Image (cartoon, rainbow, N blue to C red; front, side):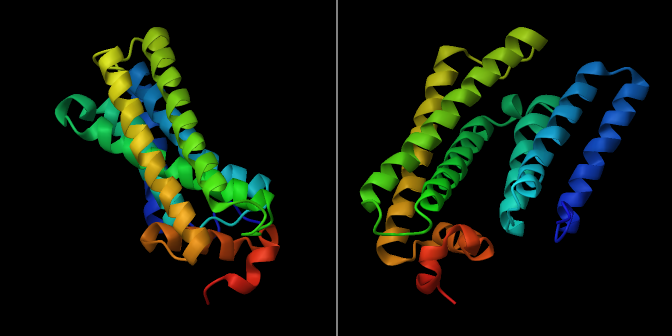
Length: 217
């Protein structure tokens, strides 16, 4: 399995740009920019690396979404100060990440049941989905605090007010992901997000054996 197989040109361009940014920043002695660029590149490569390690197939839209999220949050947010320039930047990223991680939580729980829609009540799986999104959001706040204290960044902005606002947005995003998972289990359809779930399940059918006959063609 090739980690770069079916990777879109846009994703490869972003990865290459980040590598160039690291090298240029090191050459110019801009250590903070080099660190931010390298951290962005490493985090962007985590999803395909994990997929390669566990023999998963990631839909191109999923890989593109994760790459753009890491690029927007770490590189644009810190290196180009988008958090200060755009008041909604932080809220948008937290909301979208909560939805994304909530959906990942749903896919993981659904995988544990091998795609069996009747192994657990949809409401229970939806609740676990919600908890996953909120948990990841909380861990991210810990990460922001660590980065601020360790490297002098300003990811938390106004302190506890920023943190609480982010956690509220995380809860809202997790609720959307939870509702999406619930509707997917009940109706096998939940709009674009439900389609994303179906696409991932279709590409990794060996993990969802009991749902094969229920997948949309």
